[in-house]
Structure formats: structure tokens, C-alpha cells
Image 1: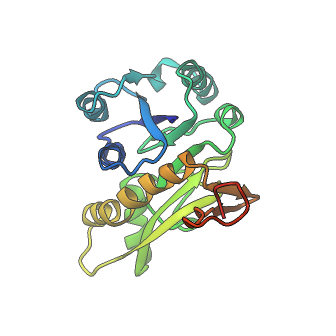
Image 2: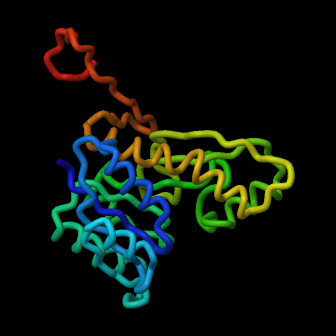
Image 3: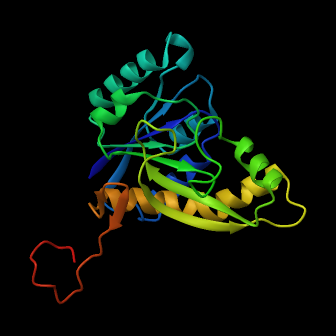
Length: 222
């Protein structure tokens, strides 16, 4: 089983989606082994406690720089023997140390269809405010690998969501979560844990399981 750490900063709705997927048996070969919050009192820690998952606080305010914070967080992840890091509503930019320590093993969910409405400064309601201001008709969510460019890593999964007349940033945020984020994030985590994601440059190939009769390759993947 792959040991997963989920990094959070607030309410933890995407964490809850992962917990629920685990309960349904949808996180194949994966176990949420730790939830790490960037601040004390985040409700996500209550969600972790209710699910019997160890919770930790690595407070951003305790460190003088993003680099120092990233180094401390990476050390904690290594100490916990984590194999996959999931950023789920984690609001802090991390530096290259975590990418170097976990190459193609840090996932992020972003509430828009990258490369639109992404990058530095685009997070939370700000994304949905920008979507509505621009007048686009379709938005959605993206799960991608993390690299040193904010929201710039290889894309794993995306799902579109219609923008409706009369939407507010709050109603659009909720619909994107329900119809996209909570669906594709658990799926991407499960695919990673099953070894079904192959990164080729900026492309991510989702490998398919062999049929019951086998494919003759002897590798369990087609």
C-alpha cells in the first residue's frame, strides 16, 4: 500500500472526498497515512481525527521563508515514510526541495481548467471570481503533478463544469467541487497508487489494466 499524506490549510472538503473514496474502496493500493495542516485549528484536522488518520501541524508562520518551510515539511514527510503527497486546498507555495524529494509524486487539485485561470495568485474564490469576470461558459478542475512552476506540472485528469447564468463565485465554487474536484482527485490518487500514471515530458499517460485473459506482456498493464 502506498502511504499518502494530504496537505491542507482549511476546511478539508477535498480531504473528505479522499476519505469517502477510501471508505468505498476506491483508493486502490493507497492509504491516507497523515494529514498535515499549515495552521492550527484547521477543520480538516477534525475530519482526519474522525476518520482515524494521524494529524500534524506544520505552521507556515513559524518559518521565515518559503524555502525554510518547504525544507521542514519535506523532512516531516520523509520521517513519516510518505510515498505520495496530495495538496488539497493547501494555500502556500512550496519551493523545489519537495519536488526533488518526491519527483512526480506530488499531486495538486486546481479549481479551473489549466492553463486557464491558474498560476500565482489564483486560488480559492479568486479563481471563480476571475472565471465569472471573464465570461467563459465552461470551467472545471484539474489534477496535475507539481513542479517548480505554480500550476505548471503535467496534467493528469481534467473535468469540465458548465458556468450558469446567475452564478456567484460561491455557487460556482461549490458546483466545481461537487462535479469535478471530488471526482477526479480520488481517481488520480488511485491511479498513482496503482502505478498507472506514466509521465513523458509534459504528458501523462494513463495505463490500462490488462483484460482477464491477459495480454501476453507479463507486466499486468497493457
